[in-house]
Image 1 (cartoon, one colour):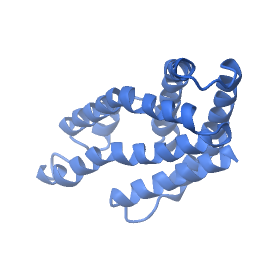
Image 2 (cartoon, rainbow, N blue to C red):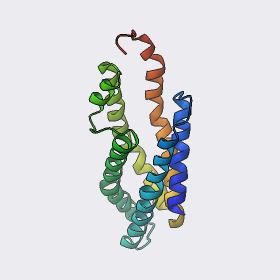
Image 3 (tube, one colour):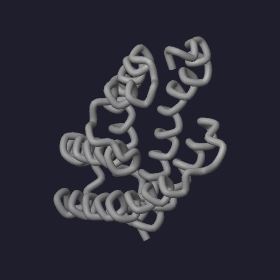
Image 4 (cartoon, rainbow, N blue to C red):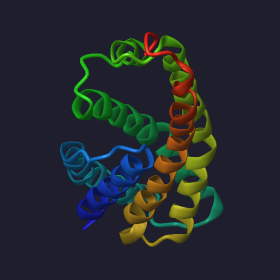
Length: 184
């Protein structure tokens, strides 16, 4: 069940993201790759992570135990998941050979100034994650029953994905129109 819902939420967030970014025709291959990532990695990983944390902390819900669970999750699973997501998105979904954002965007014809702004958006996203996801983890471990934790987390992740997408969409919708044809 966790894998199926993770796949569905991954697909839903990508479909909404494609619609918000004014893509005329949905990229079905990209959606299917996101479904596979959710189904094959996010769901099972989240399921076993929460089972492990539940066993490790013996199901206790006191403030100190929940704080430890959140700390363990944020110091181990979060960095790992971010790395796996970035590699999956860049190399599998986008088919890039390298993770250097500015190099890849410049090759696509996006001006290097735009690539640097996108790098800034990525840095901003990483910085804000340090404050957002621990709160999600706290609510998840404190109030959500074990069998619904992956679903809750994936639902919040859809919102996060779309929220973090907005600066990039706004930048490309309004700022790229200022470049001349030769610069793009």
